Length: 257
Ligand SMILES: NC(=O)c1ccc[n+]([C@@H]2O[C@H](COP(=O)([O-])OP(=O)(O)OC[C@H]3O[C@@H](n4cnc5c(N)ncnc54)[C@H](O)[C@@H]3O)[C@@H](O)[C@H]2O)c1
Image (cartoon, rainbow, N blue to C red; front, side, top):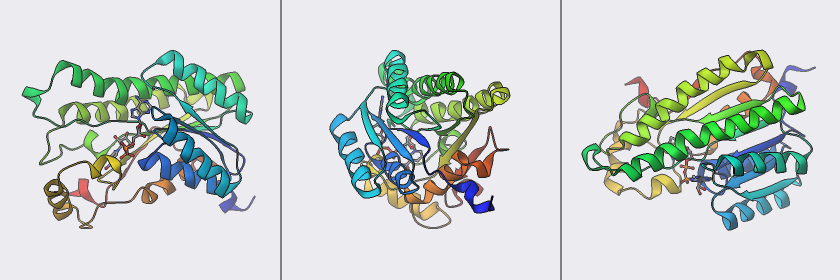
């Protein structure tokens, strides 16, 4: 086998959560370009269906979209089983759905705190657990790539986002824990930790915050979702068969300073 073939994802069946827009949408499209069959999971049913249609038309791969809330474990189990039966198995999951809420810690409501935790950590666990069960049923050495964040390592400024930062630190440690627990089953679990990336999520914040960030980032610019896709491809491919429990930081050098 020529070495570069190890990076190939052609014919693999890959689920992407939060795939209707932003990082998930972009990575799902690039996975389709790699020849993978793609399942899009999102709360936004219409946008997920549009993303799926674009990928199907452009890349001629099997694509299905599912309206699913990652905070509902039963729905997650059923959706992952449904994608697997549609595609003919499950090989990898980009466990990426997440939300952010800003506000000074002393003012954050209990409801907002719980909502961020529910999506960003409970949801990531429910999806990883359902995927692992599916891999075990199918006797597959599957790969899970969680989207954490540099906010799981550093504290962002000027915005306050205690729940988000805490949830992403938990994703990084959940990744390591599951990597160790499932190593004997051949299931690999890694995370990517993006820095500031231009998506709908960051477009919604104040312009002065974006200027503040760009001034500090060593590259003096935010990243694009495309700049994360290579890491996801690597971590899902046979080029990374000895890699598990890794948190790959992709942040334009932000956490170096
Ligand atoms: N954009 C950044 O700068 C940045 C940086 C670091 C990490 N991240 C992380 O990357 C991931 C994607 O971020 P993005 O910028 O593309 O955000 P985004 O808001 O553009 O997209 C997130 C997607 O997740 C979906 N989603 C939210 N809650 C859901 C739920 N309960 N069930 C199913 N789907 C749900 C949304 O509908 C949306 O389509 C998130 O986990 C985010 O925390 C983003």
